[in-house]
Length: 149
Image (cartoon, rainbow, N blue to C red):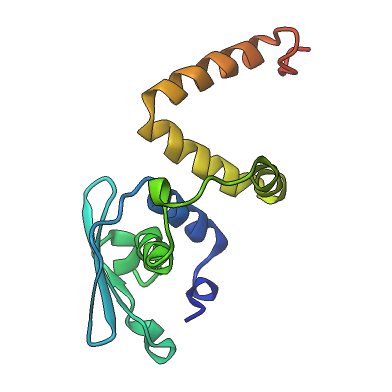
């Protein structure tokens, strides 16, 4: 199913951040319905029919979804579902630097910010390193191309 077309772009980016942060609990599929728990400010329960004819039945226990919208928790569960069967993390072969540069160069600003936020929230060492760089950039230190130059 090409599920991304059923979501606003901003919701997709926020859902991708949850996916990157491993906020989606184990997925189950029963009778063509994907179920998952997504950890946000609290735990939200998502139910998503995997049949394009039933997209109106998407549900989540968050207030945004209860008001009739498709939410970031739904998108996060679907990103996780899409990723199953593909190696992730330690199981994936090391990506060549040229591919990393290509992906970083082609990604839009919202995707990069969403991913960076997820990574920094999960990794204190990287968050501290980024804070040091950000502080130098804010101060306009030489070589940082900060706002005060």
